[in-house]
Image (cartoon, rainbow, N blue to C red; front, side, top):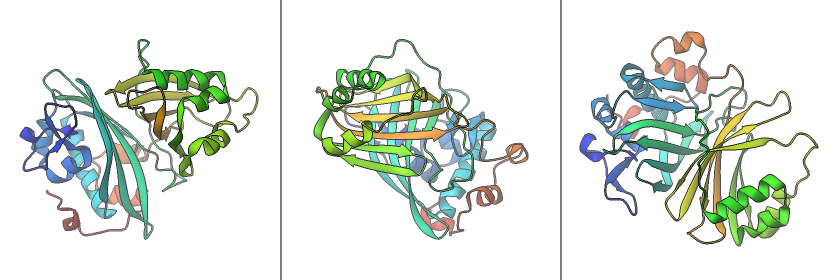
Length: 307
């Protein structure tokens, strides 16, 4: 996901459960395939929205993005750990953890990659969700842009969870989870893991300041009968906290309760963006990546990067 092996030069194939086609994971495809092969997976002009660089539109910008992403992963001595993937006929959601060397230390960056494709299984857009705040707390990032769809349908467990959260009914929230459920929450300081009813009670029972509760707008949902990925926007009514977008993957197994939940939240301050105007006006190069992301240089050969 989302590259397709007939268009990827000697890339390792990955088979999604319940699908009739094979796909190659996002970052693995970036590393293991030629730019021409990646271009062939698109139905038209490439369109990628990545918090690290902003919106990438068109063939030329996409090729610059591929080169810069390869260099970024190589400089961070990155390793990839797949978490899960779900497919529907026109969309897929891949979860992966990038392990990077930042400031001389190994750090984990959880990422969710949403790919849209047409009836011929050719890509139309890619949205990437992650937050670099835990790695680089002083910089701003760009959020993927997604419009809300009024006809979003959620599976029963997820729908009841969303309704309970909106009403603030703590007991109703807890009833939507299995007693041994695990919730991975994305925060500005990093990922937090909560296990079991007692920890979830403390998580959702924390008091909120009157009049400061954010508004959550569901934009899209991707469900394969076992997992449901919900993309949403969070509007804050307090200053100076900016609007945010995020995605949460719910493991429901088709049943009435949720067994696991993983969220990926992206902050988007006004005028945000990893690169300033001068940097965005020219192709992304290694010097720019190093300057803004403070990665330690490594040998590209360690990742098998192809030029």
